[in-house]
Image (tube, rainbow, N blue to C red; front, side):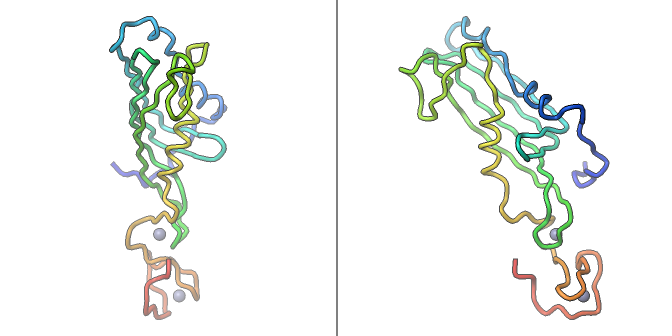
Length: 176
Ligand SMILES: [Zn+2]
Ligand SMILES: [Zn+2]
């Protein structure tokens, strides 16, 4: 499998925003009436996903397990995806793998609310988008590289040194 051929990939463009909202909004109301210990897995496998305002993800997949506890519904989630970004050295588009795991409690009442302060909405739907955006943003590298030993661009002629050597002498690695 090659994750670098993303130029052939295209987002389902009808309305990526609404599509995202739809896919990440889980109807969990029916779990409330289940006995303690019941859980249900929601599986995700989405080719392209945009988290507002500007997090474009590819090959998003993973699972959100929603379990019934006395205090509320517990979400245990594990996701992986790729983010399309630009290499800081050679400026070519590159695809960086991200993964995240997080657990959160959606409390039934304010009395049992956890540190993150989440309460199960009255409509029985959990929206994963805000949490996902928050957790994935933490994983995005500040200085993404197309490969660990990217040679960058020639400071004199701008040639991509991964692809060819120009006539200039390069005595040291790029600073970044
Ligand atoms: Zn590079
Ligand atoms: Zn050069």
